[in-house]
Length: 302
Image (cartoon, rainbow, N blue to C red; front, side, top):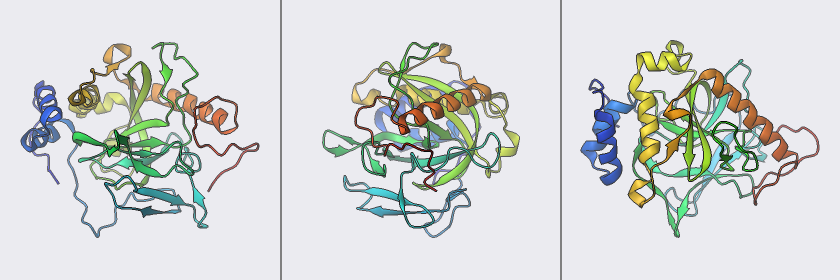
């Protein structure tokens, strides 16, 4: 793991991030880690993360080798029943304003992992492109995943951005100090949100921190994060702005004049995405091939 020991250098992060995205050089990546992310706390191969499973009492099991098209990470509940990490793990925890997040991509890794939204029970798999597993051109500097029981509805137009949803669960960027393994279910505190627009679709990025992280008590809203660690928000925005450019794609853009929005807006977006997911689950919304196991009465997979 790369330890962050340098002080953030204003403005330098953007140049270094472009360089890292373009060539994936180790020196550029190491410097970006110093500028853009909170320090990495290493986890040994045998250590148990204090965040693993969070409020989720089930278990996970992998089929196939990581880094191959066959890899699938499956979820089961406490009774051994296969479940969907998207539909069956609760969004809300027992703490007000705290939500479960499912980690798909650990910080400082490059494999583009995601919940397979069209497969039975939605296991986590590596994204494919032109018949090959997809890798970022440089590591992501935060834990990245989804908020379960949410959906960005492609049938609905956002009034402020004029864009439709991207047909996926809400993305969450967890900024804590620990690298969380794939499949970790961790309670997080939203701090703010970015309205990324990717090829004309709205792809919200919830910025959050694991509630057990050492810095969680210091951070309750976007203003606290920007006051204490101003490089983090700008780093997230610029990473997601540039990360597709090595493949010849244009820069992503952001609504609200590139500004991150506060926790209250994040909670509003989460609430709307939960309502949209509920309509999807009950078969009230049109979709293109998503696996949802439509229900007619309220069910809870746990």
